Length: 350
Image (tube, rainbow, N blue to C red; front, side, top):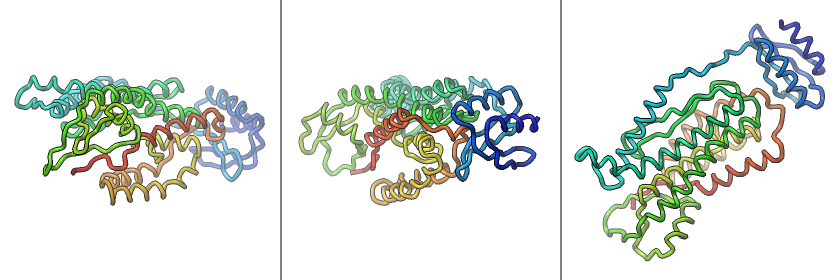
């Protein structure tokens, strides 16, 4: 079969070198123009075989690698997705009740006080993950439903994740999937934040008492100033639970858009710059560590996590076909959202 494939490739590219092992065969040379059409034709040919092709560039040459890669199939354990969703709904209700002055451990009915916070935050997280899910499905990828992560403290959750269980078809697909989650979450978080800020109250800050303050992003600060223009000295905005959920949603969006590793921002950066994105890693790590030293120690933790998830690039089937100009312009949208939602000092005690 390999000999037949190599004979076929001879009709699609000028071959300079053939190498590899028993598992993967590597063919280097120049694909015939137009390259995009040639790659589509090669993909179509391989779809009728047991082999999967990968397209990349090395030292100025086009490379076609092919082998029999294990094809993951989605295991329909929907009960686990539902169970984790319900558990996270309960933990966010519990935490949200506390933000609204309730204590479900003393009075079970207080759990309903957590509804504004819980439903708002769950809507943001769900839309973020479903954005990834539906776009990846549209791109022909095998993807799981969201797995929510419950936590009975802080915000009631550590977020949610989906697993991409197949090779990403192209740089364009990676860009679209990477953008879909943050954009969907942002679109939902923005009106929730606006409504929540409108419901928030301006109150005097007690003197001589430590107060837990949430930091501001450019966007959240702008909304607060527009919706509450009169802020006397010694007063501050006490966030309604919906406003807090919106704040968390926007903050999570900014964290996800950091252009590193397997974060959404990392996927977007890889789709645009491929391996060159690593040139920005040292400056990004340096900024995170500086922020951690002077503003918020949590940035050091994020820097460590970012280091470990930055060591592996996503597996993209076709890295030769570049993005269109329109797609490159679209990639600026999440960058703008990142700048608007970034919070240098998320938490502080004053």
